[in-house]
Amino acid sequence: MSTFQRPTSSRKNTNTLPPQQGDLEEYIQILYDHQKSCEKAGKYLEADQAKKRLAELKKELDQKNKVDVKDRHCSEKQEIEKAHLDEFNQFNTFWDEKMVEFDQEAQKVKEQTLQRHEDELRQFSDELENSIPVKPKDSAELLALRKTEEQLAKQENYMEAHLIQQKILNQERDELEKWTVGRQQKIRNLITQLRQKQINELNALTQRILSGQEEQRKIRSQELEKLLQKYQNVRKELESQQVQEITRLDKSCKTQSIMQQSRMNQSRMQQSYAKDENQYIR
Image (cartoon, rainbow, N blue to C red; front, side, top):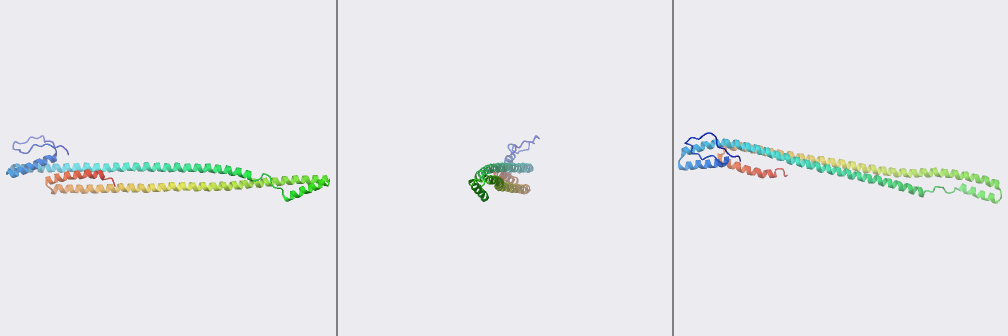
């Protein structure tokens, strides 16, 4: 409450009003009590003087109440704005950290998968090299030629044995080349199959990561919409309450006595303080 200052103009000697002191509401109470005291004592001129002064003070009180209410309304709006901004910043901080954490974890899993694929491929290649013989088994034709060579040598038919021997060498070379080509192709095919399996696994992982990121963006957008709607609802409710309060104040200024208005103003101020504490807790 503001302190009510005495006017600088001098009073006439006939002024019997109590001296103005304290805040406006307190002085109104003093002046009202003085009016009623004069009324009971039959001092009607003094009572009328107090009544007229109270009428002047009523206008001043009306103006003061409107200014106080306007200032309080402005303060309430600022409190809501601040509370909303704080919650909005906390919301963004939470989701920024959550999404960064998700991306970091996804990158970690992806790197681990790539390392595992590399280890698997190296181990698989080593296993293939060790499990598939470098040289083929002798073919039936080669076995038959060796048997023939042996028989010719026993028969001391060395020229024929030599020819068969050369044929065996050529056959061994041809079969080894054919085996080597087939062996290498088989290893390449098996490695290609493993690589394709790994590519499919990595693609599936990447898709899950993208889906997770999209789901987070979707949830964040939905939660943000709820937050903004909450703010709009609180603001509209406050504006509605403030309009109703202004309407009641204007009406009370016209219809209520000055003492009723003073008491209602004090009660309204007490209620507003309690409401300010709970306005944004919804």
